Length: 494
Length: 95
Image (tube, each protein chain N blue to C red):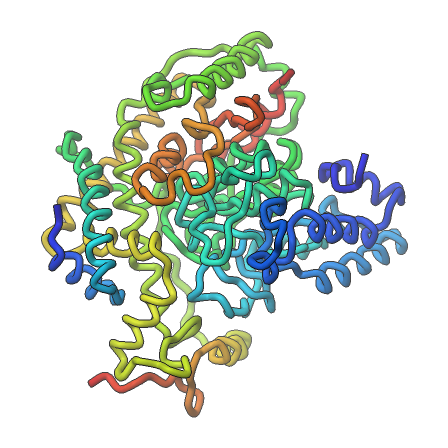
């Protein structure tokens, strides 16, 4: 078994038993990245471009090696070594790491150097985890395929002609291809779960407020959450436990009150577990083969004694249109800060600048700095919030949001968790949906409700259609991450 | 279908420059998305309260004090600006 095949737990054990050093471990990953991922600046010219995954936008080699050496000293001196110490990870390039470029996948931030660490990064550094680099994403996390990156397209490790999903496509592909032990993504409408499903890895979208958003470049602030992408459910729990918690720098972050003491208490209760399966998620539009994989997975839970029952989430079909008012409205406000004045790309600094006055700087910097999808969403949000449309669009969407949340509240009176597919199809082909925004939006149809309701949800790989992985979504009650993680752990595959 | 003038108006409100060709492209795309969003009109929302956050959020207040640490950060943030003068952001003329 290669070092790069190991999970967090296995890697930690290996380090503790001195089977390998943190430096050797770090070097194996960096070598693997060089071999399989290619260096971003040469990607375009590279002849064998199609054989590379292109998950990384920035590789922080020196920084990683330096950190790894420190951890070896730590282990030698027999100081207390946290479980994530020396574990190489990758970070979605929308989360700030001090002193490292953070692009958000956008030309407008192409040369932006993060002036501070995001809270999650501070916590991971506190555990002495080793950051290998920053991963590709759809520009400002807007997209479902990573094709909206302003730099290049990331490919699915299972089939290089297909997308890794998005927007955390680079983070999911990097874990799937063993280019890191785990990664961080962010999820506003499914951006951790859907790429995790497409790449056959585990992805957790925590409850809104469970993880601090400080240092996460904002897309839609009432929906955004940072979540781990890992090889196993156990690893997802390890990372989540490190990054969660209230943070004074994010006033929407909260301390989770509910806790499950340990596995044993839950294991004893498998027979009491009640799982709801919403009928509204098995409708036309879902790939039959995906449906079959999901139904088989649910059956396997039933076989070990979990009670499965049908539930109804009647407003499911309104979640996607609701999301496409709320998210762009918030994005429109959040992205107003990219004005060519405070930081980021400014048209006025070009050698042949056309801007004559302040308005020109705004217009031209944003025209050149933002890609098509970002501009589309900014305009949608502007429209939905503009005078005369506010009530018809934004306010109506917020009320529908209440109904969607109430659907879940009602369902959770009867069941402990809910099972659904993560996405209606497996990974689609590169270029297949990029020309038609609405078709692209539909790949998030099963994931957006969770963000609107602020719930935690896990994606675990449960089977394949041909060579392509399919994920099961496990949705939990607010702050019951531990429970859905335990439910994920007891899945017994083939 | 929204008009080209509406697209231009929205783009202006959003401070987004658009080429004439793009106006047409966005007109088509935004119209098809807005048609899809129309679906929300089917929902009976009478008596519903709007949800802005899924959890209850409250204003968080702190003392208005000068934080020396943040002062240092300010200098770092100013370094990121495309153009500065005497410690201030510099912009082109407004008029």
